[in-house]
Amino acid sequence: MAMKSAVKSQLTTRKAPLAMYFNDISPGLSESQLRFRVIHFWEAKNIANRTLIGIELLLIDEQGTVMQGFISSSRAPTYLPHLKAGATYTLQNFLAATSKEIYRVADQNLTISFSNGSILAPLDDIPVSVSFPTDRFRFHTHEDFQAHRGLRGDLYDVVGHLRLVNGQSLIDRPVLDEAEVISTRRILVHLQSKDEPVMKLYLWDQAAKDFYKKFTSSEDTPTVLLVTTVNPKVIAGNLALSSMASSRVFIDKDIQPTIDYFSWLGSNPEIAKRVNADEVTRSETMTIGQIYAYIKQENAKEASFDCIATIDDVKRDSAWYYIGCSGCQTKATRGPSSLMCAKCGKTNVSGVAKYLAKISVYDKNDQAVFVLLGDAGSELTGKNAAELVNNYFEANQDLGAGHQMPVPQALIDTIGQTHKFRVKVSKLNLTGKIQAITVTKIVSSEVLPPVPTPTEIPHDVEDEVALPSAIVIDGSGFKADDADGSTSSMDESRKAKRPKHGK
Image (cartoon, rainbow, N blue to C red):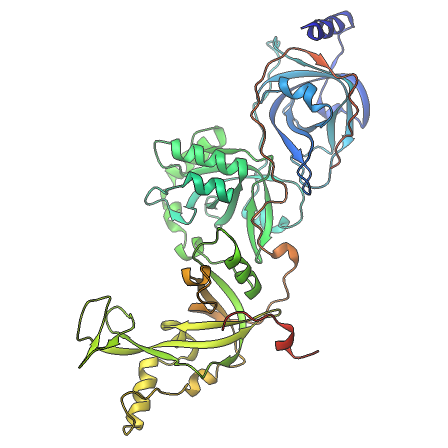
C-alpha cells in the first residue's frame, strides 16, 4: 500500500505529460506517456531450457494502432500481478526497441519495452472523447499462408469453418477425450476459409485446452473457428498451420469476426457442402523414414499417408495372392469339402483371388517392404488377380489343387516404376508385430522428390510453446526502479546406404 501511495504521489506532483500515440514513437528511451488497452499477454520462454525470458504483450491505442510490448523476466514480478487482458493503462518512461524479426504479432517495427523507471497505472477515468478498440486482427488467406510457409516471419490470424476435428466429421458431433488432449498436448482441425482450400491447423498446449473447453461446453456443435497468430509451417511437404504461445481461440459468436463469418456461413450453406471430401481427408505425403518415425511415436494411431517410392523388387518367396470370400473379401479357409468364411459365418463360399504381394521399395534415404492389398495390386499392374490366376490354371490343368501360382510377369514388370502409394499404418505396425506396410491405393505415377529438409519433418512439439500462467489481477499504479533485465529482440550401392524397414 505504501508503494502505491508513493507512486500516486509521484504521478500527481509531476506535471501531467502529454499522451503519445503509438505512431509517434521513435527508437530509444522516452519519458512520454502512452495510453493503451492490453489485448493479450503471454510468457516467452527459451526453447532449449524452457526458462522464462519475459512477458510479451499485444497493445492497442485509441487510434487503433497495435504494438507489441515486452517485460523482461527480472521485471515481470513487479508488473505481472497488475496486468489484465482487456484493461486500459498509462505507461510513462519506456524504451522503444527494434522488434524481433521472427514471429512478430504486430505491423509496427518497434516494441515497447518496460525499462528502469517505467510507471504503469490503470486508466480508470477515460475521457468521454477517448475510446480504445477492443482488438485488431490480421487475417491471411490460404494463398498468403502458402507463400509464407516455413519463413518464421510475422504471425497472422485465420478464420473459417471447421471440416474435421481430430479426424471426425461435424455431421455427428465430434467427441474429444480430455485425457488424450492433455497427454498429446494438441488437437488437429481441418479448417476452410470460405471457398478456399482446406488447411490443417494444429492447436497446441493452451490453444488446445481453450478449444477443448469452448467446443465441449457449447450447446450446439461449433462450426466457426478463429485462431490468432498462427505459424504457417511445412510438414511433410504440405502447408500446415500451427498455434503459438501467443495464439487465442474464438468460436461461433465469441467476437465480431466470428459472428460475421457465422452469418456469412448461414447465408452460404452450399459452401460447406461444396468441398471435395477427398480434399478434406487428403493424406500427408511422407517419406519412408518419416512413416517409421511416426510409428515409433508413443501416441501414434492408425493413419493413412501418401509415400513416393520406387519398386526395386517383388518378393518371390511368399504367395503374391490369397483366396478371399467373394462377399466380404476376407481370407477364406479350406474346409473338408468347401471354402469357409469365418467373418460371414458361411461354410460354402465362392473363392476369388486377391492381391497380397510384397514389394521392396526405396526412396532417397530408406528402403521398406510394402504389401499390395486387393485393388491396389490391380491399380499397379493393370491386371486383375483373379484373371491372372484363372488363366494360369487353365493353361496348367495338370497341376494339383495345392499348387501356388508363381509371381506373374505383370508384377515383375513394375520393378523400376515410381509411384505415389497410399499406405496405411495399422495396429499391427504400431504394436511391432509386423513392419511391412499395407498399400491401399496407387495414387499416381511419380518421380522421386528431393530429400526433405529438416523443417519438412513432422514435429509433435511446436517451435515456441508456453502455457500462460493463471493470473489474479489487482493493482493501481506502481514503479520498477531497481530491476535490471534485458529487453527482447528476440556412389556405393543404394541398398548399402539406405536403412531398411520391414521384412
